[in-house]
Length: 391
Image (tube, rainbow, N blue to C red; front, top):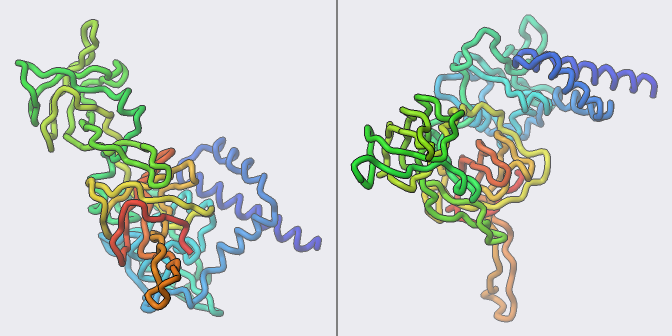
């Protein structure tokens, strides 16, 4: 028992050291790293040892995709999701194939075009490596690594950028508080009603600290309410994107009017159009993985104002960070089977099993809602369908 305790303690120290090394690579300060280490001390040595073992075990060979390649060279345009689908029947198990522990998933390692991936099978288990079997290092289970000399822009993304490009930096659903407090266009020169690209307008509600010359703002209108399929309560409003404006003159006068110039115009903007600061574009580089906890949500909206959809469409979920969701989570999509009459027995009804038909990749998370890309769908998706932790 004493030897086992020593082994577990050593595993814990290795895991702590590795976590601190990864934080250092990521540019996190030593103080922050020590804080993480202190937080980890609340985890028992047994749990740490289990995490260490799990990170080295790979997956059963039976869980590989039927045509998983023994060797694959990463190409420009590849995505983590696409590559994981080549290797695994259940792509969300990618961290296990790589041998990543939970801390590494939060700090995802990046894969670059030109890297060669090797599939190693041994004793009924499968591993992925950047070192060929029998390589000089003798270590056949290397995790993907972060480049330390820049070049971050070359790393492959998690999911296809083209599928979510319009949604990376635009509001999809906004809550009532955002509608009530957003800045807004209040007037146009020469008593005009609408403004298009190159036109000037006047806005109120932009704080002086946010109204720096050249700052960009998104213009939108809350098009229609989005309802929670369970409670039927309003969880937000679908934001109808109208264009973008740029501050050309800061707030002036007792009414604090800010002058803006329309730089993009998808629809006609005018008095009443709401404004939000242009957020930074978020590149999606999160490792696909299943939630640790049991997640149970619903599809609250299909972007575009339609009720039905399919693969490559963005959906709004009625759960978010409040349910433990984070970017990179993969959820299973399914539909209640419902109750139908048994045609062979007129006095009997039967309950059909749940129909699982697809997967959704969560890429943006807010407290009460999340946005996900439907990556796979063998059936028509509709509002009210179920989103859960995959099995």
